[in-house]
Amino acid sequence: MNKEDTSEKIKNYILEKFPLARKRAIGNEDPLLEGGVLDSMGVLELVEFIEIEFQITVSDEDLLPENFQSIGRIVSFICHKITSGAGGLECRGGLL
Image (cartoon, rainbow, N blue to C red; front, side, top):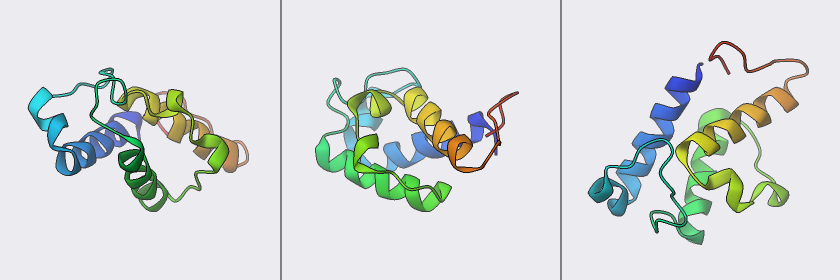
């Protein structure tokens, strides 16, 4: 899976679940927390989706605002989790 596909999945989920995201037509770098698109419950819903969709575990230590600031940051977070848990898999050339 590449970063563009991951970004699209995250964006589609957010647009589907959070009405304010649809009203604002969010982009990959738009602020989700500061912009009020996601609140604490929204982050938990998003985390559940990420864990299921990308088969990773999001720990309490991962629940930092900077990991969920924007779609781009979420994709970077997912990429980091996949590479750190896959024993050498790297995010290069747009691939997760």
